[in-house]
Length: 373
Image (cartoon, rainbow, N blue to C red; front, side, top):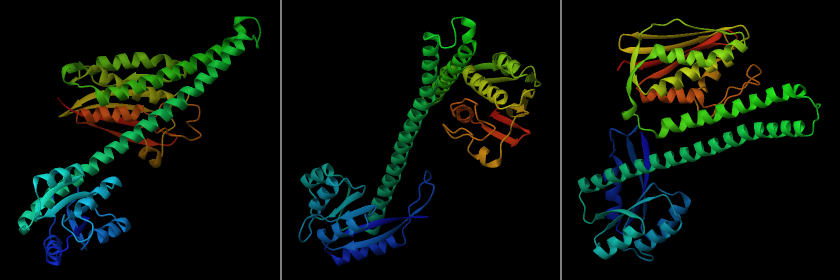
């Protein structure tokens, strides 16, 4: 249970003690909240005393009388607004009028509790204020996460694109200045490295496009009945050239007819990402096995490899956005840190999930489980 702090500002001691007594045993719960909320009340008899308490320890909720000795409640509200304090304010006053209501609303008041009020009326207002507090927190968290994602996005983009662009620029200058000779063959190694850099940049850009697609695109009009074996064949043909270069055998061992209602491009993203990782993080001369099967009310896509594997700590980081596993075994392997995050999010969009089993130096198994449609 979480406790919200309430500051009651009223020159009537009976009002202050009454609010504390009513709310001391009151809790708020809504189905969409993770926790129930209880309340801890403090008191202030004047606006000046209230501002001192707010400076020392800002409350979550402020119940503020308008007519106070010294500075008024409206002046306290204006000061809170000027300081941009994140406090939900409700006016409690018997002098409420349309003019005061409009002014207080303009200055950030969220609710009015007219005096005299019953315990039920106070609790009802606090329930609504607590809901507002919860929604504000969720909105703020979403904004903060959005800023974090954008920052990570720009950091990855600048780093991952700047390095290969610098390398390409250097290779082009070498060729322009004929540093390695006059013949085209003298630059075979430089050309190979340039092509590799371009492939890495293309991979990053495609991952970013996939990442944007699953966050923004509506699916309803793109769902169709898909034969997963056919999508698997396409993914295998795409990864085969890279597998041949590394002497890695890739095979399909699943069922021939497994149908699923989905956007075909989503299934392609899942299969291509899993197979690409299985080959990239494999050992020379290793193997990759892909299977697709229908089991009762579930569809399973399983990719097993004989690669470098991962420990438990590395697995726990695996599906975070922009996170790449970095160790001596993965040095030199290019990637955006988005692929598996994208796979996980697509699976979740269809009500499914992804499981991982892995052991260092033995290999990994990725299992995407989707509910039958």
